[in-house]
Amino acid sequence: MFKFYVFKNDYHDDPDAVDPDNRLRLNYGSSVKFYKQYFFESLREFGEVIIVDESTPTDQLIEWLKQPDAIVAHAHYAGEWEALLGKIQFRLIHLALGDPFLPEVYALKVLPSAQVELVSTEFIRRTVQAAFKGDFPRTSVFPPRVDTSFFVPPTPDQKAAAREKYSIGPEQVHVIYVGRLVVNKGICQLIRLLDLWPIPNLTLTVAGNFDQEDRLQFSVATHKTFPDYFRQEILREKERPWLRFQPSMKQEELREFFWSADLYTYPSISPDENFGIASWEAAACGLPVVVTNFGGLHDLAEGMPWQGVGTYPTLQGARFSLRTFHACLQRAIQGYRTYPAEAIRHFVRQTVSPDIARSNLAATLDYLRQTAPEPIIPTETAQTVMRQKLAQTIDRRAYRLFAWGRTKDTPPDPGMSVYGDVWNKPNWPLIYGLYSEASRPPKVNVQTIWRGFFRVAPWPAEQALVEFGFPGPRLKRYPDQAWATLMTCASDVGGNDYIFQPKSSQQIRLVQKLANYGYLVPD
Image 1 (tube, rainbow, N blue to C red):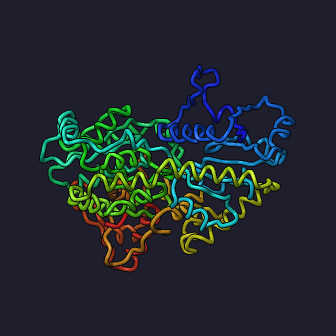
Image 2: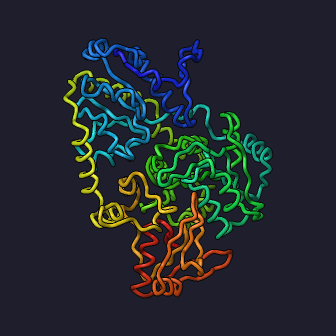
Image 3: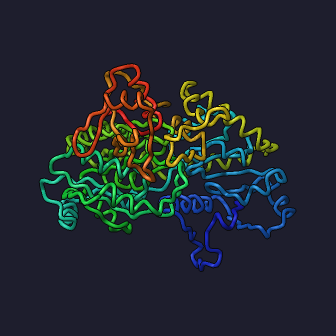
């Protein structure tokens, strides 16, 4: 039996909460909450969970952690353990959540041998091991719990009742989105692409609440302003009889909502998209899914006949082609009736089986029992190693692109970010490249057409291209000749939307920079 030492604040947020059943009381976004809960509950199968806090004497911890059955356990980033690094060598099991998407964080807690990172999918495990090899801790797959005994395909009567509840007619194709309403979950792009290219008989229902506490990665703006942006820029008095909204739901309601649907979609480009539990729960109900293949969604995307929608990195986050996503939706709509629910469900059960989680966890603990901790790598050394490995893994031209603007001699282009703000993690675009289908933005040439990822429009009086994105707008200003050159390849295609079709080398250069910055995506 093991003894797992867990910091109080990592175990639950409310130290005074009444916990008569010894259940966790966590206050995070729902998928993170349940994943952490599953992790700590699973550890109890193998031993005792012992809660420690700042008042626990260091000498006492040293004695406890010397034992071969003593393991420090924490989920995501637990700053409380930092004070102990350098003083204590210990065995560590860490539920990584989104941490692999920024590997330099491991500079704070790398114990190269007696540390195991639990990641959610095989794709994430392969990616970090291939990129960083021996300079990244040992990894093992610990898939989140998907309750496949509860999330099941409906009977014909259950499906009919669910469709009646949500007023879905027999000829309607019901497409649903479930999740927090966060700008980098792709909800703006989903509505935008259906505005651009309507699909007959389609009804889209968006279920979820605005997350005003979400932290943006590339701007000092707060997500509290996103609801206003969404209403003014995305909805802005436009009639959409095909679009509906539902608040977030409890489990029983959510299952019935899945039963009412024909297709589930989730075009996330979140920088730490770890798994997407709701997407897997939808698939457990036999519901076909159309998702991006970024990060933790990759394995689910690959399990669908139409695959997923490829992403690529830019200086303002991951991007995908709106038209490509639309085409994938159409293929799924045309084929969902011929793809049996049981085939989808079987794939989910094989991928997120509790047997896999338990077996990998048991092997991990056995490895830690037999492995002695080594001296801790100094922080600066570890950070340098991580960055060097990252630069070697990504296309060299892409690395120079993403490093541009961060040098002392070259100030950042004011059109790169909102109001001249610079992203706070220069390695983020490189991480996007690790977990995306492509490691750099697509190449612009005379055969390609480009469109705004968000809505873009020219502002002639300022000789600027404006991106009406959140938390924008972003403006990219041009001198006289460059402005005239760019505008000769721009076309108003109606609905206050523009496309760019470069034909000369100067136009290609200008459009390529807009693609690198994330303004434009291939159409």
